[in-house]
Figure (cartoon, rainbow, N blue to C red):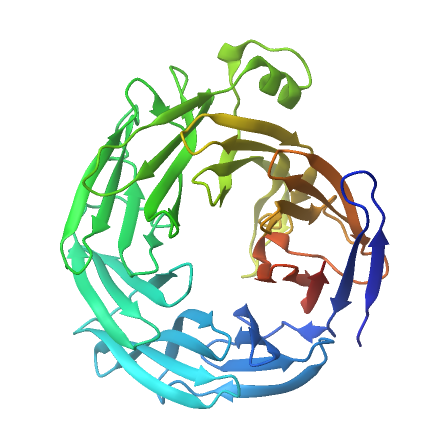
Length: 470
């Protein structure tokens, strides 16, 4: 059943009136689902892709989020593994893998908004493989290019693919040092022209990490460039990357530490272009920021712990707003026996998740500090993989909006902040979920327009789509 809620919040001074409408879809059973992907508005319908373990369906919703239809997608006569699903205003692209006679085929199928097949293309073949490879993908900001990758003993195998022209741009294997180490490839970035960037830490056995390795592809070539970004005496506490298609460079940022690797002393910011000299901008914490975060005066040398950069909002002038979040995880063991799924008993435990304050650090185009703010929030949950914690970043040309659950519980208030380009902050209460049977997963939401986002809600194996319009 539809549950429309209309919430009007009246503000003063800077924002004269403020309102948003909340529309909630009917409940959808998740019992047989392996995964789902919100595709956004395609051909006038809101599409939802559902993976039920080698059975795949598309559901379409109208403007009021009424379910219009559901259609099955038959990708192959053989079992298919979904690599990624990408939507466009008039079509959807599905990248998937299929095993056939000992070989593994990486394929692409394009469908129009009514799920009529447009075209199918084979991107690559993994020959004579006995174990199904783990194939992943990253798409460009405009979602017209994708890089498909997999790792094995020979290196990182990469295919750059044009989703619009349906052609392979290039493919190659990147050999990384330190064989046998499990790499984290979440930092892979793809430009709108199909170039590839990978930022990694050096070998894990190093006691101090004082540099980052950047691998990138040359435009129009299958060769790679390898360069190191030297942090000097500072250590890399964490790192976050995002390609800036407006300024054609890779933004690398994060927190750095000095002698104590467990405590960060400030932010660093780099705009990287292959083959050019790089300038590392160090932005140390000051007393006012540390005092605001800790609620009392502390020595600058103490720094901060448990913060990590989660997002970066790029500015048109070449500046940026770096967003760090405090997150902690604690594991506790129980002295009582706990029954496992296989019928045996063993010692159990709990995992506590804390997602708390945000630090916003605005940086000018020349790498100097512009402004900095601390946004307060307190989120605690247990044994849920923190899927309801953290925040959703809603970007508009004039401001940033942060949406999050004030508390992680069944009935909850959705809160948020609005931050202007000059650093003016206003706290908001967006709406209340009482009696709506909602439990929102904000960090899995998607922005579909300058004034609209779709956020999934999961509660008791039931899914709702929540549309928030400003």
